[in-house]
Image (cartoon, rainbow, N blue to C red):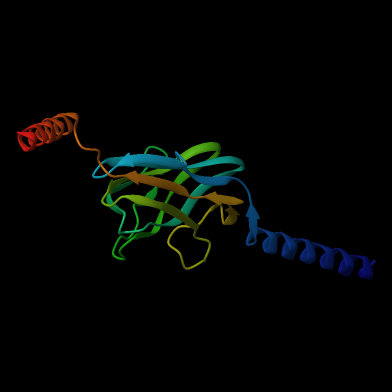
Length: 192
């Protein structure tokens, strides 16, 4: 009987140890992406992209990301966490490093699953060309915000960056008409 008690105690201790180790390991679930994934804008346009999460079958009560972009093409106008959903504690990120928002995130009482909005970013296009808006999941225990639910990390399976294509502003139609008229006038004056 005494051996049975020791065996039972060993099984309980092993089971509790297993549960604790599973509670602090990373579970992968869901996708995080920039929406729309491709944005076409003109030079000097201000535009907004959303950071959305989808396909989370497990509930989430907190999240965190780092966002980066090419500062020669885009200037950040504003960053906004969805405070309707992430209302316990949130941060629009530390923008002290040019071209990045570090430790952007949020948490809430309760939990959410499925598809949901995390934040929105507004940029100004400052040069023509194309660039990416890149997402990096924060999963380090020293980060201010972590993906998870009650201490269990629920890291997204995939992150999808957004692409911005910036075209230079075309000349207005009136300017084209004026240039055509001047060219015609100069050709006519030259012939005489």
